[in-house]
Image 1: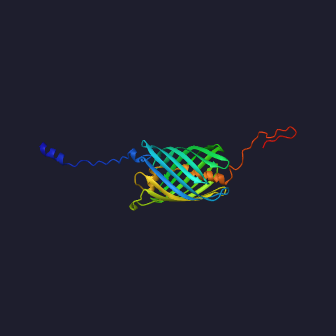
Image 2: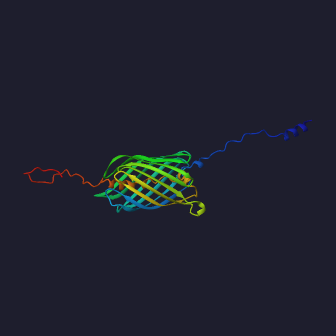
Image 3: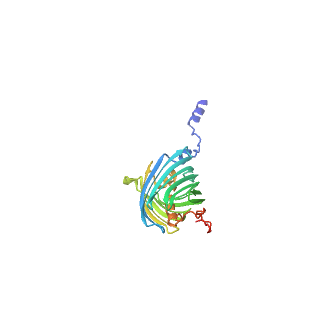
Length: 280
C-alpha cells in the first residue's frame, strides 16, 4: 500500500520558486574601472588687448588609479607655449564616484608662468563634482585660489557635456578666476573601433573672455586603457584635466594689463631737507 504513495511523491513536480533578483556587485560601480591614462597635443591661435596676436601650443596628460571599488585618484599635468612664454601646471584629484550617479572629491593644482614685470605662481584648492543624467554630464570645481601676485579669492570652473552619440561630445563651460570671467565651447569625437584608431579622439574648442581675450584650439587625444565608448570613458575612467584651464587664465590676465603696473614704493627717495620728500 505504501509503495504507490512513495512513487507518487517522487514524481510530483517541485514547487515553483521565484528567482532572486540579480546581485549587482560593488565591482560594477568602481570609481575607476582600471588604471588608465590619456595624452593630448593641440595647437591654435590667441588674441588679446595687451599682447600681439600669436599662435599657441599645448600638451597635457593624466593617469588615474582605482583605490578600492568606490574611490580613485588622478594626477595630471599640462604645459602651454603662449605669449612667448611657457605655462606649466600640475593637478591632483582624490574622489568618490558611482558611474551611474556622479563624482565628489577634493581637487588641487598649481601653475607657474612669466608675465610682464616678473613671474606668476598660483595655487588652487577646492572641491570637485560631477552629476550624470542620461546622456548629460555636469562637472565642475570650486574653491580658493592664491598667488604671489594675486589676492586670495574664490574661483569656479563649470562644464556641461552632452553626448549626442556614444563617441561624440558637445560641451560648454564657464570660469571665473583672478583673470575675470571666461566662456568656452567645443566638441570631442572618438574615432570608431572599426577604423583601427578607436583609442584616438579629435577635439576643438573656442574661448572668449573679458579684457578682449579669445582663442581657438584643435588637437588629438589618445586614451590608454580598455577600449570603450567616449560616453563610458568619461564616467568610468578619468575626470577632466582642470589644470588645462590655467594657461587661458594667465593669458586673459595679461590681456587685461593686470601685471603692467609697478608695485608702489612707499620709501622716500629724496634726501634733501629743503624740499618735501614724497614716496614714488
